[in-house]
Image (cartoon, rainbow, N blue to C red):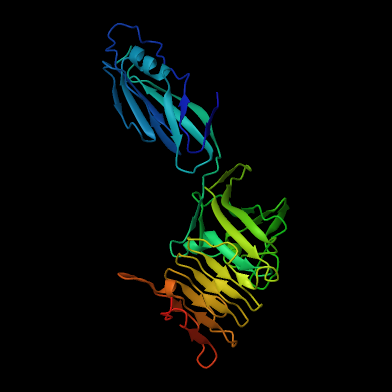
Length: 353
């Protein structure tokens, strides 16, 4: 009978037995050998206490059992463990060769061969989705309405290269996934779910989220050729969208956070406010005021990883931004434009309070 096993799972093969027609003849020394062999996996068996059998190759694809016919059958009756090679699925075959070595009955050495077909069904392996240690700000985002929110620092890895890997974003509501130019990418599955390929993830942005708090869940999904799937542990991203018309022109002020934040604007003039953590502030293509808050912040007056926006940005410090004795804070301006941008230390150096 055919044995059906599952990828990366141990299956017990039962019903195996050997026989020898001249086993009971006089002169038999009662010693024979059974060899079990598979082409795409390993076999192992557990010897009972007190057994006189000799087993070699346990945990390999070639298992040899030597001893009496009765003991061999008792051992086979408890089952042989079969595990396919890692990530293997498809056909295999268990070959059983019985050899009496000339020790059993008359007529010299005799052997027989039998085969059992094995089918290893596929099983999707759990992929890995991770966020770069250098971008913890990605889990806590503050953005102005209409801003494209980049999905930074996400990395996805398949456990089995033969499987199809995708990235699924959930709870987007009316939002959608676009590239850096605002062109839709990926598949809209409905109900706030979008699917991307790993290549599309590199330039993926979220657009069109409703004002207020949004909790986005991202998972990596691995799909086998039979359609079975496995998914990674999720990464959750909290995104607060501020409508500048009702937030007094501020981004980040409506939802202060002690976490590391990404605070981002696009083309409107706004005041960007960081929290107490190590934030990244991105002003975009307009004249903005950037106030990092406590912590070691990274400040972009223009676009992220750009060279400036040719508009007057004010990089402002207050006393809390400087840290305290023994633990000074250091903010870094990444795209200061001489003759255009301004550094405002007035509130930081104000000694009247």
